[in-house]
Amino acid sequence: SGLTKADKSATLAVRTGGIIASLPVKQGQRIAEGDLVLSLEAEGKGAAVESARAALAQREKEYEASERLAKRGSLPKLQLDTARSALAAARSALEKAEADLGQVEVRAPFSGIIDTVNVEQGSSVQQGAPIATLLQLDPVIAAGEVSERDLTHIAIGGKASVRLISGQDVDGRIRYISRQASAATRTFPVEVEIANPDAAIPAGMTAEITLTTEPVQAVRLPRSVVTLSRNGDLGIRIAKPDDTVDFVPIDLIDDTTEGLVLGGVPADARIIVAGQDLVTEGEKVNAVTADEATLRRLAGKLAE
Image 1 (cartoon, rainbow, N blue to C red):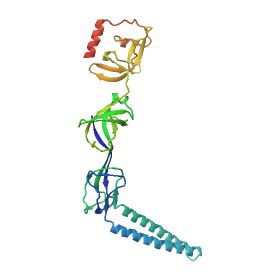
Image 2 (image 1 turned 135 degrees about the horizontal axis):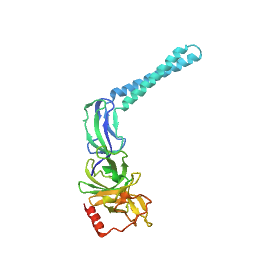
Image 3 (image 1 turned 135 degrees about the vertical axis):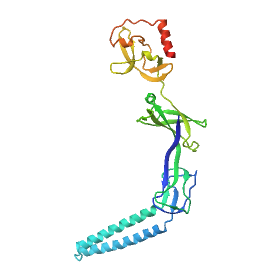
Image 4 (image 1 turned 120 degrees about the vertical axis):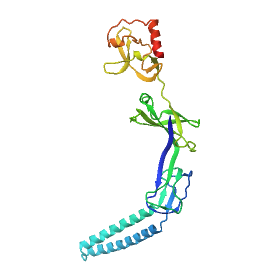
């Protein structure tokens, strides 16, 4: 199981304080990237820009005059340097004034839906105050977790089906598989991307996620037949056609109450079901087909 979440989520905030002059959005409204969300009163900031422009124009004239005098040798180099510094300071002052003017507007960083609006037109806001929450719900994401055992059977781009708590079934694709297991559960977070053009699927909805894996050939065997190689690998021992012992590594696909579901077991394998821990690879054995009593005993272990 898992939960749906927005593909993107942003808490929009003002970069400077002031009085809200315009608030053209409301909760639930769709907006496009770059749309205006809020603007502050900017009379003082606009005047500051005009003043900075005028100051820059004056400093440019002063520098040009100083440069002409310096070329004729009529002005000390120190005074030319002072004029140059004053010009640079005026340019910086204009850039700051223009940046301050630009900060009176808040625009959408991406297309989405305004989920919450925290302010009212005409109210005062402080620098950094949150004003609205923007969600991008197309695509919507179903987030869940997979076990260590299932991790090797899924891949980015793999198909997935999601059943929402509303009963709706939707299809998606795996877009993210974490490479870091949760320390508490030893499971790996995964994300499934689902097309949601009309934003009908909200964020935060409970979802049952089914990940589609490639079909594999597998067989259910009792736990007792599984053993370890000299290197500690999990597998089974088999008797080859010449009655020598061989070790076959296996993939543990599932651990059920009826036994272990194993992949990688050869279709024609003669599995050693008794004494497999007493023989080694290459050893010649007298392989005997298990009698009915042994088969019943193994069948009983499968059912345990």
